[in-house]
Image 1 (cartoon, rainbow, N blue to C red):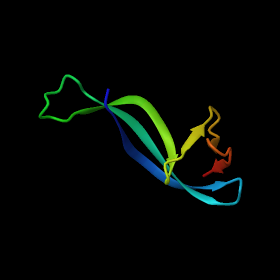
Image 2: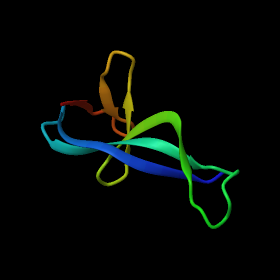
Image 3: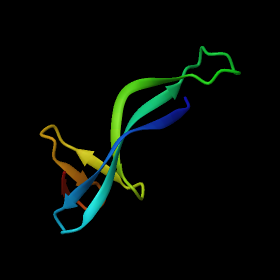
Amino acid sequence: MERRLHLLESFDAQGSDGKTYRVRGYEQLVRDPTAPDVVERWEPTGLSEYRLDDGRPVGETRDGTMRIVESGVQLSR
């Protein structure tokens, strides 16, 4: 199944390492397989994800805490 990311928001976040990071929030879309080939129709999956400007993934816990997955640096808006 073909997947695409749609940008919803972007914001600066302060890292626990003292650096400022640009975070982007995306919703995941999938191509509608019932649409004719001449029409591109994408549907939301109900899933979202956060990434840094450079593409590194950012995880979010239930309490809203965000961390850079690779390094564990905590981010705050």
